[in-house]
Length: 268
Image 1 (tube, rainbow, N blue to C red):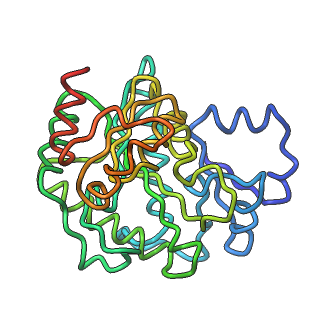
Image 2 (cartoon, rainbow, N blue to C red):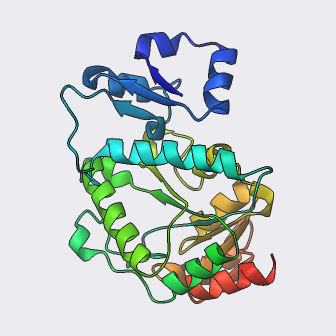
């Protein structure tokens, strides 16, 4: 369902309206001046479900860096998941920077994207086993004003193409664009990204695993009721030494995503 709406109208939605919105593969289209108001605020809609109503005729070639391309991808992913899944499926959630690609620190240049060793092999094995692979990443550089959302989507598009060349088609990508002090429910280690993906893609969180190079990734999985695996790539080696002081230790600590995938498959 595609819904043309306004921030004023959505702000008046009651419980049943919001339940209907969350229970269907819905996509909202808003005018440019109203889109931020529709997304921002405590009762705002998820950014992945809000697109801009075009002023002119769309081009014939999709722009991978445009935020609306990501919106339409999310809508397609939710629709496919709804048709495929008769019951919730366990998934593997994966952090991006330092886990899938080399840690660069607030990466906004797609030319610097480098997929880490073992990633393609591990993700391909998971997908071949029928396990959805969902990227869950904090991108606070958007909220901090370091770079634009468009640059993040361009980096994501390059990463998707690199993995696709290795036979890996990611199930979905979810990101938190907010600065640390925004108080949003989606910034890891809060479980909002995983919960939203589970709702959209019909996923079983208790049977799922979160993989990342930070203890906050592990905590995200635990907060969602899933397991958490720490990889030694990125910040992982340094984080491992602090794991004994964590409120809950990782369920496993392994060298990279390839080994993490083996760990998941052995327990599936």
